[in-house]
Amino acid sequence: MNRGNSIRGEGNIMRTKSVAAVIVIALLAGSLAGCSEINRETAPVELLATIEQDIDTIDVLNLPTTQLGTILLRAIAKRVDSDPRFLDVQLIRYQVSYRRTDGGTLVPATFVRSISGTVPVGGAPTTFNTFTVFDIGSLTQAPYAALLPQNGGRDPETGNRFVKMDVIIDIFGETISGERVSARALAPFIFCAGCT
Image 1 (tube, rainbow, N blue to C red):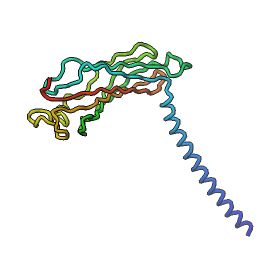
Image 2 (image 1 turned 120 degrees about the vertical axis):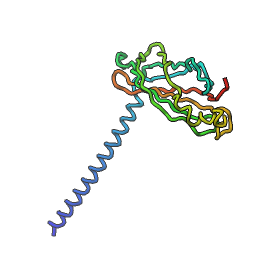
Image 3 (image 1 turned 180 degrees about the horizontal axis):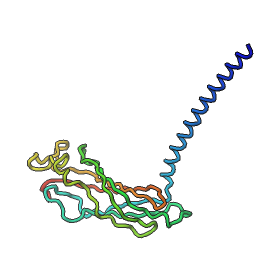
Image 4 (image 1 turned 90 degrees about the vertical axis):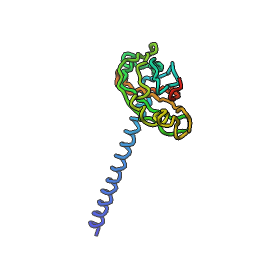
């Protein structure tokens, strides 16, 4: 009888150990996920972007021939104990997305472009002015297409002869030491047809 009880007791111990092992694995996985999130938040550099717009209205029938604006990028060290030789930011890519500000919901597709360049930590702002705000091919798609005279000249969602939206430019880079950093610049634009 005692032997049977001890076998059952060992089975309970084994099950308890299995459950404990599963809990420990789950806790480790959670803490590892939390660490990667903490690492992103505690990168030694902050990348800052500000945009200086030269143009705020884009006529889709008469596209501007000048640049639309300039993005100024700065890398700021967040910790004084970091070795500045490894904090310069290598630019990798940027992403352009859109948010309507006129009550409409149709926006062009988000797109990504590769870039290169270095933003020195603590240095003067680096100029980034070779960015694309919208793909020329998207002029035949919503929301721009509705603004064309042959398509009625009005946005079907708002009834306006223009579309107002924020162009959101997310810039991604990496410090020389391998830390990922990003910055966001936002510019309001009015898109219209035959308005300039």
